Amino acid sequence: MTEAKPPEQKQRKRKRKQKALYRPVGLLLGMASGALATALFTRVWKAVGRGSDAPDALDEDRSWREILLAAAIQGAIFAVVRAAVNRGGAAGVRRLTGSWPAES
Image (cartoon, rainbow, N blue to C red; front, side, top):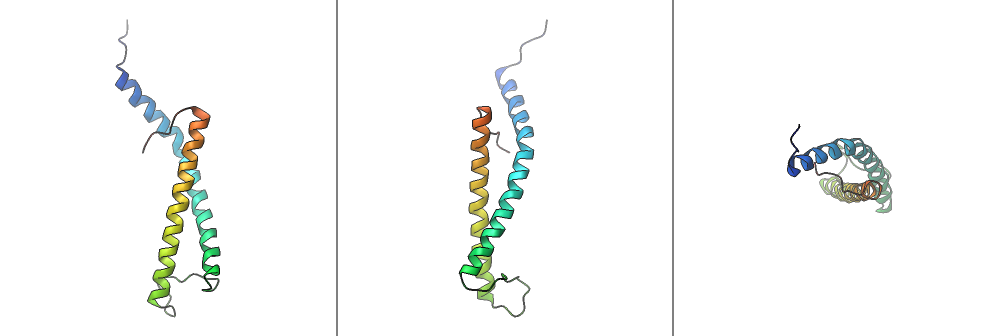
């Protein structure tokens, strides 16, 4: 006769399984959020009137101000898009499975 596993052990095993199942979803969402954020940043940079190409930190012909402004805008857009995509993905998993994905 086998002993029953304690509830904590079952819960830990279930969370590990959820985490493993969510990992490929998270990777796909990460790639999608990167592509979306890049497209959005390109549109915002054009709308700001700074030209079509955002400056790179090593662009010798660009000012510190322009480079840092581009980095700040890009960082904010990437953070917001990533949070929105991750939250939406987790909510979608909950709708499909009935439980929130395990934390990483």
